[in-house]
Amino acid sequence: MYDQMAILERVTVASRTGRFGHQSFFLRDARDGWFTDCEFTGLCDILPFVHKLIGLRHHVTGSEEFQFAAGPNVSRLRERGAMHFSKLSRREAEVCDYLISGITVAGTALELGITEATVRTLRQRSYRKLNVNSAAQLMALIVHDLKGE
Image (cartoon, rainbow, N blue to C red; front, top):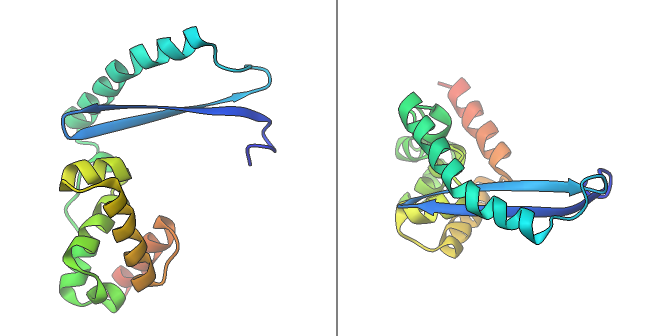
């Protein structure tokens, strides 16, 4: 995909405030050229502030994308014994809940007090048990189960 778009580089900048983290990335093509050291330093200086503002906005507005909404989730499906969800451990279901809520691996690790490697392992185990390969397939499985209610 990057070759088709003539992307030269992808720069990722992450910041963390307390237990929460944000990540922004930028794609540069041939017209933009490579990031200069000055541009990159400027990004690193301003993005933590921008990330705080974004977090504050979501806190104030109650954005459902960044908070756990009431309603069906993997943990509830596991408790109900729905389809393959009953095969998941409590922790695997929790990690899936964070995944479908749009929380990053780093954010999940911070929230649960575990390492990022553990989060990745729990996701892989969950995928294997549920016979899915992605978060999109996991969501499709959840939607399929909800239609059966």
